[in-house]
Image 1 (cartoon, rainbow, N blue to C red):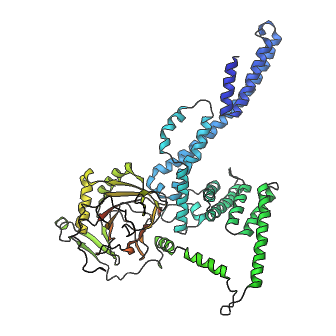
Image 2 (image 1 turned 135 degrees about the vertical axis):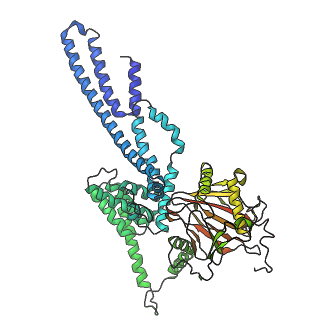
Image 3 (image 1 turned 90 degrees about the horizontal axis):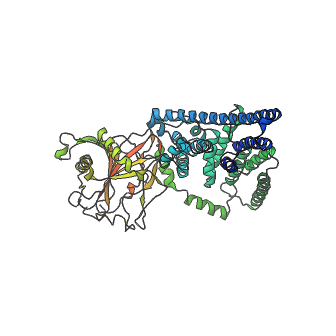
Amino acid sequence: MCVLCVVDIELRLFLRKPWIYTIMWKILLLLSLTLYKVKGEVFTALVDLENVIYTEGNLLGALDEYIQQEEERLEKVKSKAEILRRMNRDAISDTEHYLGHPVNAFLLVKRFLWEWVDLENWIKYDGPKTAYLRNSTHFKEHTPGQDDLKGATAALLRLQDTYKLKTTKIASGEIEGTRTTASLTALECFELGRVAYNQGDQYHARLWITEAYQRYMNESKLGKVLDLDEPLLLDYLAYSSFKQGYLDDAIAYTDKLLSLDPNHERAKNNKAYFMNELQEKELEEKTRGDLAEFDEETGEVAKTPEELEKEKEEQAYSYPERKQYEALCRGDPGALKKVDHKILLCKYQHYNHPFLYLQPAKEEVIFDDPRLVFYREILNDREIEFVKRLASPRLQRATIQNAITGNLEFADYRISKSAWLRQEEDTRIRHIRRRVQAYTGLDLDTAEDLQVVNYGIGGHYEPHFDFARADEKSAFESLGTGNRIATALFYMSDVEAGGATVFTKVGARVLPTKGSAVFWYNLFKNGQGNYDTRHAACPVLAGSKWVANIWIHEMGQEFRRKCGLSASE
């Protein structure tokens, strides 16, 4: 046999599939030994032909082993393909509701980083590239990457915190406003926890790895095929418990790990470290108890100056606005300000504008200070679909303006994609702007373009102002049209759960309603910013949230919204 051919086969098979290499090398070795021995003279004696028969039997045995391995591999590929096909069918049957569930959205991203990668590896190792692999490379730019998996994980954890969702409920796919979906497996819960663990978020790591451990034990009882092992889970749980201050739990998990694997080096080292930390903690508590003074008024142990200082720091960094923001997102009654209903008005308005005589604005005043005006049916379905269709190909990661430099940049507190539509592009965009001008009485010649925004998994925009503060000298300087005097925010979809617009300083909350808009002034009549307009977009818990907005600037409003007669007005 050609030596170069043998070397070529050997090298290619060894690099791609070691077990194929082993089997084929057996076959080649048997062939080479037989041919070397008889030197092409087998026809001269029947005894040599008898040896050939036995050799052929050995070759067939090796070939059968190869065929069996190939069949097992193909069955594995077929099984994985069927699972992926079933998931894809479920997604395609009702795409909007499927992607509206954050667990489904996370699993979709996860599939491209795990299942599809495994599938490609199984195929890739089988000889030269197949047509599938050649074709699949054309779609790589549209598939999620590692950053997407991290973002999807962060989104689920954000939803968990904001809406106080229990880990077990999320893992079971039971989220308010959605249809229950497939549960997460123990491995998927573990991967969620491991992402948090690697990012130093031991709080969420402990929650999700605990859930993974419980599911692992249940799945083991049912005899399901698992890609996890108990010592690995216990190892992660021990360390995350320790980092969260649960020393007793950390020691208990480590003891259990060592009972399963007495030679686990890291567990043995951790056990000694944890025990030492526990002894120091007990000694510190005993010493503090012996030296502590009692508060005569409360009868309790008085706090040391160090403890009082630490408590003061914790209160300073408790970030009360964050609590208010999340409470408003949930709609907690204590966070919502009660408004005098005598102030709230609901009526048809034409504002003496000819454009609105036959089709007046449906105006609702939903909050008094700042005055929030809610317009119902300001957009129709055809306009909404047109705007979404025009904006979709242009959507890019939304940015914020750096308060110091004035430059646009990405930020974790704003997760969405946006596109800008100019009025010159289509008459329908001009009609929307003309309608806003008629409703508000303001001049839109100096207003910014229509910004269209789509929020992704757990998409949100944390508390912010639309106007530039006094120290933000560079903001809107390039526009030359002054500050943002007012905001018109359109809702272009209903949202199944979450996604409210909340005003954190005053306790106001606006729920998205398709076709409606909310309008408010960012500046007082004296040109100063109204800090009560600080607002946020709550994370989307379920569904898809589309909004659009027009920021209206000061220039051009001199005779439409006249300055006040006093500096305080």
